[in-house]
Length: 100
Image 1 (cartoon, helix red, strand yellow):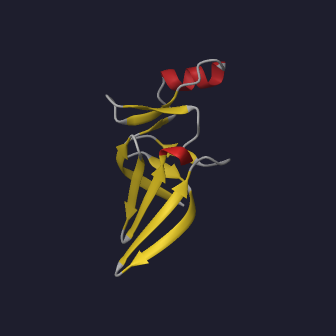
Image 2 (cartoon, one colour):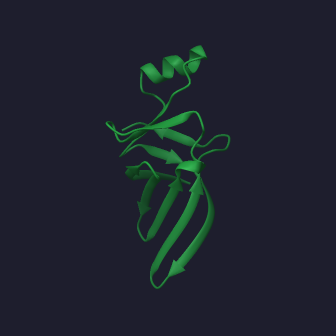
């Protein structure tokens, strides 16, 4: 699934579409991405590999508000008329697909 990020915190990322609220915990974000508080974003920190280094310079790998991410839902809870989901982006083919 692909959703728009609506909030980024050190604890994780929040997404919402209609009645479905999705939370991606920081433990479910790839380990090479670190939280930068001043920018309120997760960014790739691995500067050892040239490809990732260039991506970091041009901000291609950045999880921030209004970016679109592809994720996998792990679990869903329904409470009344609200739906909550826990998801991950720490698998192949998941993560940012469009920058804000």
